[in-house]
Image 1 (tube, rainbow, N blue to C red):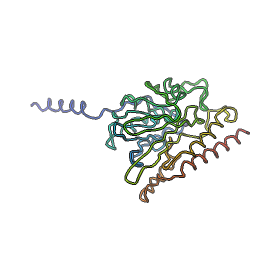
Image 2: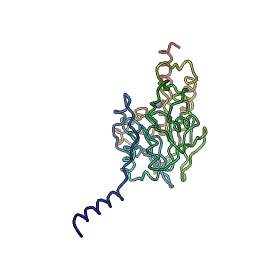
Image 3: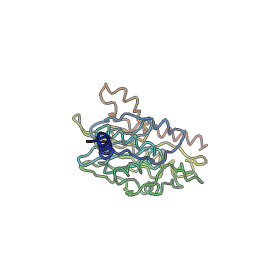
Image 4: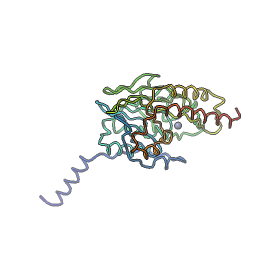
Length: 293
Ligand SMILES: [Zn+2]
């Protein structure tokens, strides 16, 4: 065979059979975006549960006997990093059957549209989260809503399923329960499932953000968000919780825990959810004091 023809045929074969590169949506720019989007090696947290996000933004992969579940998609520009991380672990992103959302802010929902395009998976969130995802716009009851701005950093998503409080998303034999924890956003969800391995089964909690952060001009003391945060902190503190994860890795001390991996599994800690809730209440108290309330 002609040598040039052979090279062309080989190139065509590589293009046709190699992994398809994920095309991200337009990158979102924010003060912390670049640092948060620093690449992070993926790793197993425990049993069926893997970290596939970036250094500053969580994305969690759950392996089931009938496909994969992904929680959160980070920023629009994080999607290719998440895609590569999933492949590095030996999984196929096309096998994602459900994408679950913690809350509809750019740094957790921004990558979902691209990740859905590659997998075709349905996305699960609350009623309030569904409005944000399907429109790609924050609603005016969100503490971080910016009047007169249409730049939410969330590419609109199709095939979004609204799921009720304490309802379950089931893929294969794995059940992931939605626990409503509003306050940081009106539609925030904490996701709960069981991770099993030889050492036993652990209740794993992806606790939604409980930080009292807002756009300028918003007062937590004025609206329902402060009471929602207090209630949601109580809900998270009361959950059966052996492993705490959350939308930002620094909320659950990921880097420090990774450095201690030779001392057993530092992610297993049955008081971590309680400490997370107490810390959130401290933040809220400081915020209310700064508002003069
Ligand atoms: Zn947020």
